[in-house]
Length: 312
Ligand code: AMP
Ligand code: MG
Image (cartoon, rainbow, N blue to C red; front, side, top):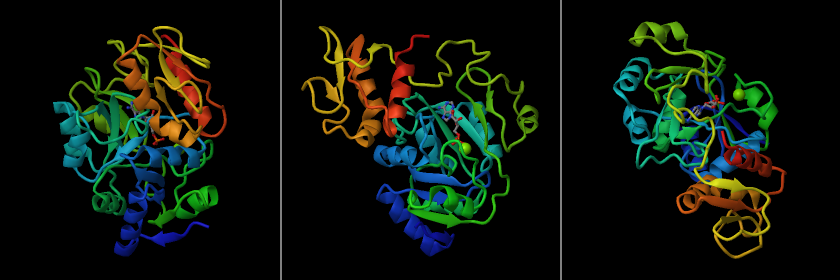
């Protein structure tokens, strides 16, 4: 049974200690209730994916309480800074190149070199992030495939026992997800329509925003990859590495290269996946990857490996 508590200074402190331990806390925002955890802790993020039952690792939105917190995580162009200064806090997510020294973990970004950031308008959410002192990832607090929750009771109905604490801030004001705009390319691009009307952005940004969504109308290749794509070629479900191949193991097996989890723990493997791929990608042209059981978090790991192996 997960407790539902109103947002008060005491319950914010309880939430902070839960988050510090790597726990999951459902929080109200002006869009929908989010399932929050420490964005810098890959074990906590793996737990979050597990609780949602997501069959893949989508990059998550990191929620910040202030502009300085955001600037530590991402590189802001002049247009992005202007947009953030005018429209944050609010239901607008900015996708930006990740900053050197950023603290949000690889797994939360699904291995991408870009990061999605938002400063929520909900005062309780910002108070919590401020008290925690680090960004929180917070995808909608529902099981994968279910509708997004706009009340604390919805979260309870969907995730009871899977989340450590639910903070109740009443019904969500907007009830739909944030608008997502990328500032990675030359022209700001709408990636998802959402609670902030796009006409606001069109009026406000010189030249307006490009539409068409992720993957379309992109001029420079690699500008907006929706998944982690290594330079190396991946060979999946390999028993052993061939000469010249880097090795990414799982479970007991050849003692060489890197191992996602020598004990065969999928949770640990998920937490290490992207950092391990990056490390091998820098050293090898080809990487052989051991079979990963396709159950629990293994499904999401295999989904991302299959995408990373695909040459496009
Ligand atoms: P939500 O499920 O509301 O947390 O929204 C997450 C959305 O943000 C997903 O649709 C992601 O694809 C998108 N997103 C997060 N990070 C990035 C990124 N680095 N690049 C592009 N889209 C992103
Ligand atoms: Mg959702």
